[in-house]
Image (cartoon, rainbow, N blue to C red; front, side):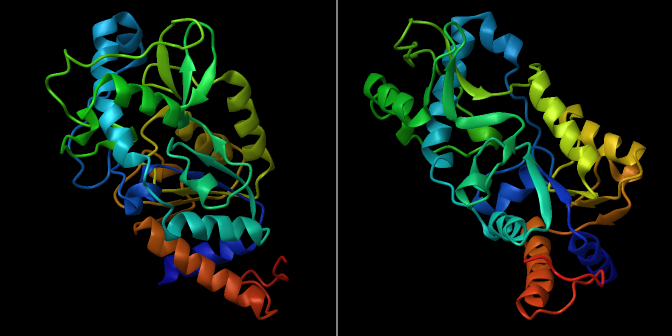
Length: 285
């Protein structure tokens, strides 16, 4: 496959910044928002979440069930392949738009969780941060049997439950305030200092590799635009079109795990054998 050979050559030069989206985690059983065949999703916005306790009850009633399933998801071969490329010295950084924490669990150090982590909970009033597992235990005690419902998992740990008025919401143990997953909701902004850190990584990278993202939201697309404006090569691996296709130097329409595993096999087998990398320069240790 010519595109895979070109992609292998590009990544083999090193100093590659990787940006991942929901498509990387679909092989772990977590559905994406905009992949081929994905049903329409209407996630709760930040403005809706803070508007009323009833909205927060509806959110937590659904998210509590979703976390009982999403919390057990495991890193897939794609996550492990990215971690291997990092360990081999080929990557300069990893930015993920996912909130599932699977890159970190695959052993990838220094992951930038652009949209936060759903395994943490933050109080909107006192800013105390606690583990999601602790909140799950509290919600289980307040709502016995609720998480046993058989429902389909949606992106970001959401599920569809129509009747939620009997669900009991847990408040912050520290101040009695409003609890929210430590993630960036739709309608909420990524912290400015984190954005600047990602821009710096983009500016320093020799190439940018986007994997499993439609780049539909600006939070990820802006880094692709930044790279393109600087003349930095951009490669996109995704099933279906993306909002950044016209900015891409190389476009591979294929599955994330299969492509990442092929990259790993092509690059690291050469390194293990002491052979030159596909770009003709010595492979990194």
